[in-house]
Each structure stands twice: as C-alpha cells, then as structure tokens.
Amino acid sequence: MERTFAIIKPDAVANGHTGKIIDAILGNGFRIAGMKMKQLSEREAQAFYAVHKERAFFGGLIKFMTEGPAVVMVLEAPDAILKWRELMGATNPDKAAEGTIRKRFAQNIERNCAHGSDAPETAAIEIPFFFSAAELL
Image (cartoon, rainbow, N blue to C red; front, side):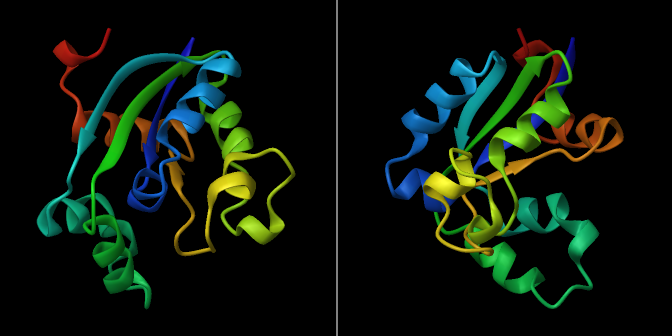
C-alpha cells in the first residue's frame, strides 16, 4: 500500500467540483487517509511551491493557490502515486485523456484543478507539510 498527497485546487472548489472529484477518487479504489479544507496563506503557498520559486509562473501560482479554499488529502492505494497521476491526467487539460479529472474539470494549464505528488520522495515531503501523523487514519 502506498500513500500520495493530493490537492483539489481553489478553482475546482469554487466551481463546485469537490464532490465529483472525491467520487472519482473513491470510485477508482483509493482510500482517503486524511482530508481537510484549507485556505492557504501566502507564506504556506510559497513554502509548499518553493521548488518553483525561480520560475516565471511562481507569482501567479501563489496568487491562484491563495485565492480560495483548497481540499488537501492523503490518498492510499497500491501504486497510489502513479494511479493518482493517471486519474488526474496531463497538466494541460487540452492534452489530458478523456475521463480524467483535469479533462473534466480543469479550466486551463494554470488553473488545472488538482495536484499530486510525482514521486515517493515528494509525497514524503508534501504529506507532513499539511498533516501530522495523528491526523492520518
């Protein structure tokens, strides 16, 4: 069993897609080990996305991720990282496969409705950023 970190981003929450995305998660065999709605502060968003600090899109990303509440989750399944990334679809929804979360709910490449850890090492950093061990079931 593997764990991964996931975010339903502010655009999807604001557009009322949270329930549909959670349904897709559960319908694809994931167990939700932890979940909470959170309004990220600018400081939290900057720390979480620090890996992108030098990229041109960093400022816009921080503004987007702090514009409204997001839902942060820890998902559990065999091969959870790969499985969640496949269910999300390509970052650019125009290139995402039919039926994927981003194809169904993302507005564009910047407002792409979901985030997921890209490797076990990333998940090991991202999960404790938002969840203590006591919060995970």
